Length: 481
Image 1 (cartoon, rainbow, N blue to C red):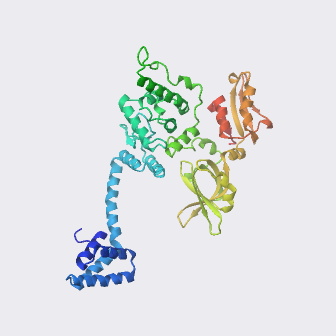
Image 2: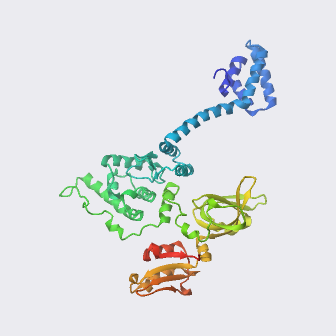
């Protein structure tokens, strides 16, 4: 280091060579410098001087060197660290600039087991406009990789519930057959005993079969049969049994999923996203707020990114993504809530009275509508929001919407329409929202209002059931303009 004291070991070497310290004694000097205790350093100064004399070093020169060493103790360690980190920072910044996708893939792989860090890095990928692909059994490896199109492919090793053994078997099976055609072909191509129902469920829920199958709900329904079929094939092969015309294969023109398509309902967006969250630790293909955005803007018009300080209360909507509860000096609980509407995030304070009032509704990954007072915090030079009120989505619909509207055309209605509609509404009957029917007949249109006996709880399950029956575009909650 050209005579410049950079490392702690050099302090120990100076003490050993110039003042006759043992290595143990030199380490004591190093520790004393780190603690910066004047009385301890005074003792070390005398010891250093006497030791220097004993080995024939000029005591005046020895004290000058001791002063340099003591000065280094205050500034040298952090200088050496900052220099090293500056070099690493420069190298990584250069890689991130010139090779953004491979760099981020490597960073994600390095912290693949830490979901909290993966979430941060995925957000960084989105900020960098990098395309991210869900785990894909036909191209994913154990770690995050970059495909020929420049997209980052999610690593199979980041899927919760899928261990290293199954992943090695998947890669080996793919190398053997080339590409998997469907979930049945996949199970048959993997070494026997390497897959089980839990692994397959995780793969389906995270989207690993999306490119070789229909909706995830159908794939999920196929798992048991696919595993049984693969197991039977393996047993037949082991026993040397063959079909009289050769190996039994699916008819070329037969869709392997055809027997399941009409038996299973597609998962709604919320179910798909929750599957991703459970297996990957985050929402990848969308955001839970997307499903509600058009509707909640009728109740909370301001996006979080556009919030301004205002003396008047404001209504905001978003997904709860963070929750911190802490003790006040008086011994009460208060809470800091982090709300996300994909346009931005905001932290909202709930003081003890409001925390006790709303704590049952503070559920992470759930949508809420809040009324807050937003001020400018001059100390932190940021916006500060305090909670006044909070509603779950069902409560907000009951408070702010006029009801649930179903569009019907006379051609849709069979002779059992009234009974079918009653069966759909009956499980949700409550002192809640009114049901309206916008009916189009052969020669006229009318809005029919159902009576109080058909007031319903305006929850998502009811919405999904009615949409399954009458069409996604024909059922919605509606509001005054």
